[in-house]
Image (cartoon, rainbow, N blue to C red; front, side):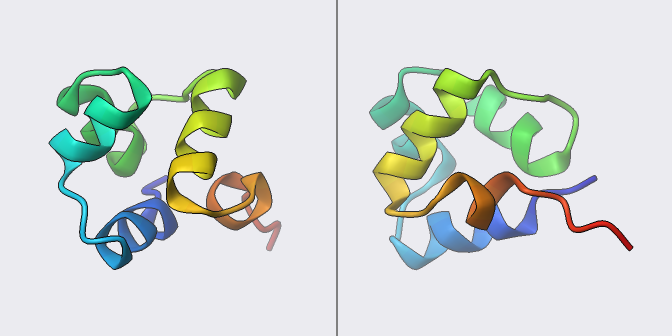
Length: 66
């Protein structure tokens, strides 16, 4: 499942995928894969992304049950 909330939060901070990747210590391809839903990041990476973007885990990574 695509992570559009992550993509929107990144864009709201005016960060490219590469800039976010550099800030959290991963490759641009990793950030891209997370946004596309092709990669499930570790909890440590999720927390690093949330701290960098000023969001909570729930705001970026919690999947609502339908």
